[in-house]
Image 1: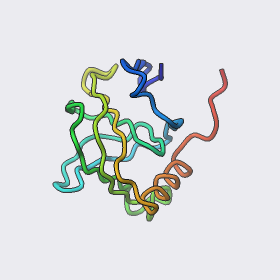
Image 2: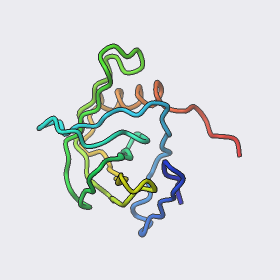
Image 3: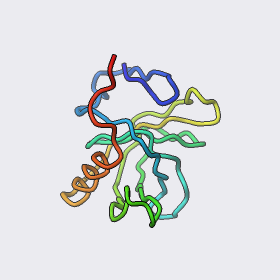
Image 4: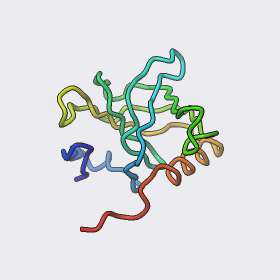
Length: 134
């Protein structure tokens, strides 16, 4: 069971969908765009080396392939030089706690060393270090 933004919980229906690495909640929500069309898909809610959670206005089909682009404002010290384009596959999509949004979990596909370095840099710059106290 994993806490989702807004206080909801995601319970994987199948253990094979459970993530292999810990994901980080972020201090800053980056916009996510379709890398081909430029259409806005949503906001980056959390990130791990293997995938991300996106909050958007539209649901996505499980298995759908996406080419995602994450890029912060040009004048942001947090995201400067860390634009990322990556292929991804939708693993699940469900209404968020806020009914205006859908939460979509995606896993990255074919991540090269440069993209992996950018993901790690985004985690370092935007992620909350360590665990929250209980």
